[in-house]
Every structure is written in C-alpha cells, then in structure tokens.
Image (cartoon, rainbow, N blue to C red; front, top):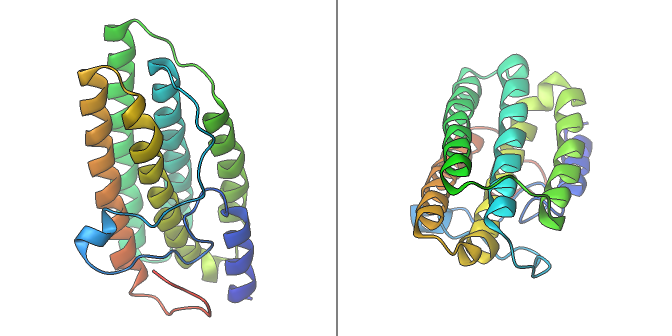
Length: 200
C-alpha cells in the first residue's frame, strides 16, 4: 500500500519534482544546493510582479502542506520541520508584501504560476488523503521534490529575470532558505525505510 501511494505521489509531482517520488541527488551539502536538472520550463520574460507572484505561490503551497503535516505527521521531527517551514515561509511572505509596496508593483499571473498552483493542488489533496502510516514519508518526498523544483526555477528563470538589485538579493535569500529546507528534509527522510525505487 505504501508503495502504491508513493508511486501515485510521484506521478502527481512529475512536473513539480525533479524526479518522481524519490528525488535524485543525495549526498553532500554542495549537492543539496545544486538540484538535478528539471524538465525545462517554457522560456518567458517575467516582470517583478510575476516573479513575486511565483514566489508567493511557492510560499503558500509550502505553508498549506506544512499545516497538514503539523496535524497529520506522526514523527516529532517531521512536525518540528513543518513548523520551521511555516515560520520561514511566512517571513518570506512579509518580505514580498514589503517589496511590492516599495517597488509599487502588484502580483501578476503567469504560466509558471498557473502550473505551480495546479500541481500543488493535486499534491495537497494527496497529503490530505494518504494513509496515516504513509504520511511522513510522502510529505518528506514532497518537500524534497518541491524544494528542488523551486530552486531550479529560481536559478533558471526568476533570478535571471530580476532587473533590480533589490529583487535579486531577495531571490537569492529565498534560495538559501529553500536550500536549507531541502537539506533538512533529506536528513529527515534518511531516517525512514526506503521504498522500492527511492532515491534521496
């Protein structure tokens, strides 16, 4: 049963994760900061409003899933991780609002944001319905895949499109936070049994 849900989670996250349910690239801290190549995104120039909207969507997805983890996780370590993720993504949201006000921009939609939102909704539904015995592993796999994917988007699309030093600095700080979350999720995941086909 765990394997079946693990595979279905991988399918739901084919776009969002860098590898399906497991996630490639375990190892050193340096490796944690250099995710494996993801499927290429459609190249599109992004305005500051679109960039901030994408980061905001990533934040909201992480906070939604962290709240589910806080309620459903059986491991104290996973619950503590979810609380950290919530607090640090809330701080990013505060920074986004401050940047919007300072730069006098509003969040704008984009294909990238729509894709993130669509796939995150599927993943959030899985986290709400996966059996309790499988929840911690499923959540950590989601965190590994989702954070790798977000870092790739920052490196390939968001940071290169930032034409303001202030926005670029902010995005690099977000990237550092995501890399820390990724590293911690990998450490936590290594404490659980591996499933067939798992790679962390």
